[in-house]
Image (cartoon, rainbow, N blue to C red; front, side, top):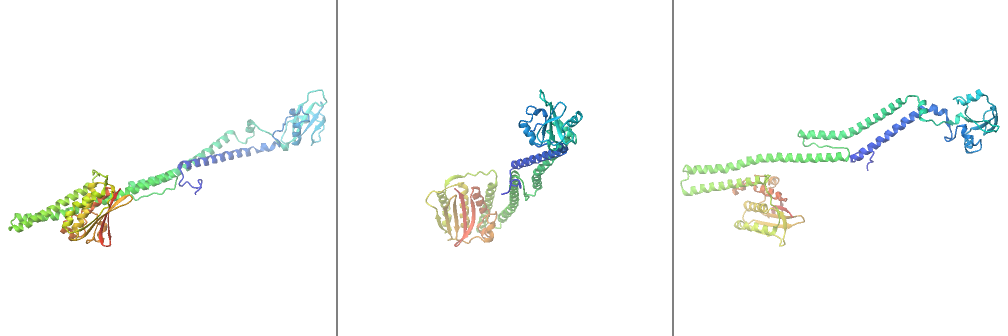
Length: 473
């Protein structure tokens, strides 16, 4: 499993942008921290000058007047290394609270005022307060070593210690934040723009007619779904275009074949009719022969036109399919019974295998009858007398399988791949003799597929021709 921070592939866009925003906030926080540390470094000269080990230690002598060395504040002061001196009215040291580190025992006005200035180079921090009362002590002097002083600084004092103006720092921070926002925005925009650019390029290729174009995206889940939809759309368009191309090619071939198949019988009809008009068929026997020939050819032309119209009707968008759930067993028996006269006339041996129990399926009864009649008619037309014809029904889980098989001459293997194409016949000699149009199997297959089923050709030992019809339940 990929870590969400390492890869954005297969990751939702919302999650990706949320993680990016969190990363941006972390970067912004680091930037602010960096600026803060820079400012801190900029004023270290002040912080190093005044340090206090205990930030809560009072540094004003007046805050020790009540204790005079006997209390928690005094103890806190002594712990920090400072001490208290009680002075009389002449500024003489009369008492020391803590460990006095200098040797001064008395102060004049100049020395005392100079110490209270708390300059950088003086060794001790000074603070003094007057003691009210009748006692001997008149002043309380606070001293703390300067090397342990840490002074709390307010904003105004901080500004006074900065090396640059406040505007400089505001401008610096604002510039860095704007730069970070620009870099982040450019980065996010580029990440979103990259898959969009791939999609745009793919669409452009499709618009130019390159329907084999496929795209590969490495981005968030939403972009991956768009890429999958694009590839699916491209598959459909390519398949539809190829089918349309094949249909156009088939239509052209259909027209050529139809013209050829119509031209031959019509030419024959014209020739025999002209012979009769010119009086070349004088004896009644020859006239009857010519008229029978003209009639058979006209029947062939009529059948060809009817099949052609039926084939075109199946491809028409106005074709209405009337499928319903019907009992198939009895219907099949009726269809076979209608052809039984022709079967007996050809001396075929019929084997009908239909289960006794009811079998329901969804199909169009007219189209189903057309498919079965077509296959039985083909078996009767192309096989010699005495051929064994089998019609069997096999109920399955989701469909009903009907087999129409014979042990006749069979169909050449080289024609199996195109046997269901229009104007394809078993062999030319046989088709000429029987007057077949070459459209029957094509119509039968289209009828089966219109009903949601299929028609397939196979062979078995003892049965070289086995047509299988499948009808959904």
